[in-house]
Length: 553
Image 1 (cartoon, helix red, strand yellow):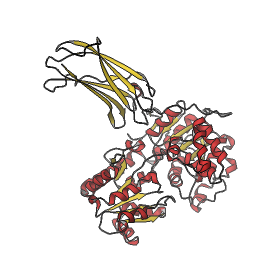
Image 2 (cartoon, one colour; image 1 turned 180 degrees about the vertical axis):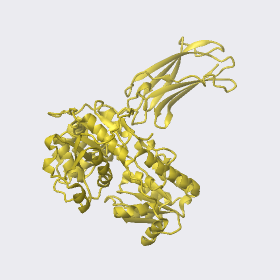
Image 3 (cartoon, helix red, strand yellow; image 1 turned 135 degrees about the horizontal axis):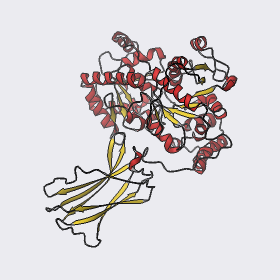
Image 4 (tube, rainbow, N blue to C red; image 1 turned 30 degrees about the vertical axis):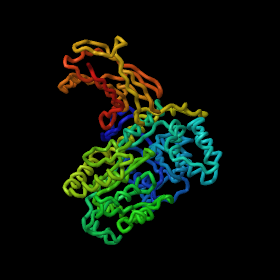
């Protein structure tokens, strides 16, 4: 599940990691402090490890004036020198205006790009629509997504807006295909990119989170005192920039449930203008237990995390973002509740409790959190496992080695696109990232009467029809692949095929298409039931997609 070494886009572990100092010469371009962005803090942690392993030069982001510490330690080169003398740019790309100069440079000069958010649609809206550049926005979506992108862009001119379209159209294809390679921080993210652009060089690498010394309990108590937080009541925490996709409003609603009537929630981080957590809390009668602190300095963040009993890191939908804030929570030994969704489903169950999405999200969340708060020993075990997970899987030195290793491999690689850009053809999503829907039907040979005599051997044909919007992947594709379980139960309830292997779906199946699987079976002497179950394989094992049962007589 973790990433102690690099993992390529097909989920295969890359065994070679750089040891010692390599000859690769990197130009590092990223937002840096004092910019208020998690990628700036990520860079502060990553840079020392990179400098030990390669010829590293930090490049100033446009006309930025960095913090005194950055200026003194790294003496950034001027932006205009990026890529000079054959140096390889290493870009850090996020989903907000802090990365305007990164985006422009990466389109001009191929390099290795770390994609911190799979979806860049919000970035393009922010950089173009804030200036009412509707034509530029339409052109950007059309270049990346063809006629679908152009259709989605048109309503914006008349104030139409669709959150679904924003997350469905990532608007990153040209940027990625102009790079020598792309780095992400989860195998799920690498799989999504490989699915969208099959020939893209993409690799998942560790995040690189330092393991801090445990926070003094007195410092945590002092944080509660200074911010008028209760000293003894259970305290839940939500950390990082607050947007609707972080589901913090669901956490506020969960406080109104009986299971959490004694709990408080502290929200640490700037909030998007559309967020009104305090208003939501007032309407639910829990305003006295919701504490919105806004942005706190990075040096205070550790005390804020240590002051909480449990972190809430829910997410839906997802832009495929790297949750550095969650890993920092883990590094301090604080357990977390996350959404059982996308990249968060990769987290080990030993350090995160996963809450399914859907209509019962609030009730399930309240029950899960209430159960955890009632078990201090389990909270301690989860926190210890979370800290160990970061130590084992996301060490800064391992992250730096994996990044340098990828840069070495891709140093002389040619980008997929070097000249005029043509948008990629739009294809349906697959069962790697979108849950399948199916119709399962049974038929017997020879056709005609369906009576099946005890002891008689007949051929069973199972017809599987893709009734959803995603392309089914064949079984041998791994995660997202489909396979068929066949059960034959006799009159006593015993499954006569319990030890038989599942049957593979041998080819991909597009929406609306069907495939058939046939096998010969003998009817039990005492009659019984025939049951076939179609499963989708994934990070959480196999889950049923469609079921068909038929009694035998």
